[in-house]
Length: 219
Image 1 (cartoon, rainbow, N blue to C red):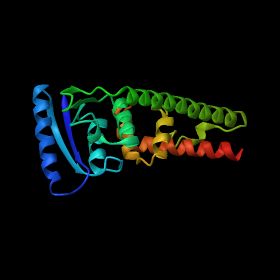
Image 2 (image 1 turned 90 degrees about the horizontal axis):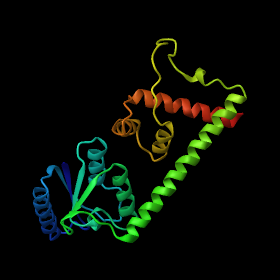
Image 3 (image 1 turned 30 degrees about the vertical axis):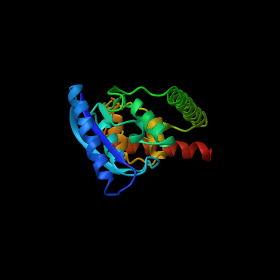
């Protein structure tokens, strides 16, 4: 497997550079032990409670683009602390990323409390998705019953009448836009999830959705 090494210390004091170096050396040894190929080593001097870290987004980009399948950290607190840690573990689980720690010498074993929280987060997210999908479907049915024709929103539909319309989860596009992801980031994520689609198509389909939502509320 291709792996990313992630090392973090909480302050930028000179003494912490020794800790970063030690973390990297231990994790390189761990990678060799498990015959993992290290494709990048990310080092940060940031608080574990902070989610907005350049290294974290760089790491997630590797994983979402399928350039690596495994994460190596010294221990779970290096990834993050508090809610930030849970949020990152949840995201990595969704991306199906294996996590190895130097402290445990192999794949991570989460505490019972952390595992329980992650299960709850997953259940809540799934129900939020179902509620959101139901809302979209109800709105579409209502709009169509009141005379709205969704085909009117298909731009350039006469230019390629035989072309098959791409199918991908628009509700996920909406959710990611609400989380302030760019259309390029959304397209990358969709492609990583097995939905080959262009940024132009994603943007156009999102505009169709917004117009449909607007017409639904107006009616």
